[in-house]
Amino acid sequence: LNQIAKILVKEQLINQNKFSRLARDREFIKSLKIDASSLEGYLFPDSYEFTTDSGEVFILKKMVSRFNEVFNDDFKRRTAELKLSVHKVVTLASLIEKEAKTAEEKGIVSAVYYNRLKKNMLLQCDPTIIYLLDNNFDGILKNSYLDINSPYNTYKYPGLPPGPIANPGKESILAALYPAKEKYLYFVSTNDGHHKFSN
Image (tube, rainbow, N blue to C red; front, side, top):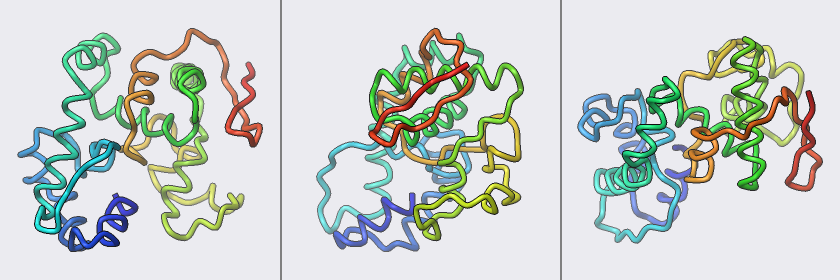
């Protein structure tokens, strides 16, 4: 949300405070038929055309509307099959979005998270820590960060964080809905945009 707001401010399209306040306004969110405490995760990443008089309400509605187009009835049926809420699927998809770059790896990363959730293992997802740090992350994940007391800290608290840490694209949502059939429990970055997976 904060990163999107900064881009829109740079383009002189919004007032940042109004945008951020609206994106966390329960009544406004409810009017968009989103069951969440903020629009984090529901501003679909896509190309949009806005004018300087579009305004915060129009821009937020447009991005959420695009999310609803993508998260169609088939996606909702699959969500019900998995006995998950849309919010949990979007939250998981946001973790996948931040961890994996390729469609193939997104499905395997998704499998790792499902396998860990089934075993009540901590997800230990680095991007959840980076999300907590927001603008204070300098590119180096320090051990001290892993002690931050927040439900978003997946090194400290089991299960999914309370909400999305990014706005996932369609590939990440599909990966959350259709994880690969793998038994892996671990992965490590190979620093070239890929990962090595292991049991």
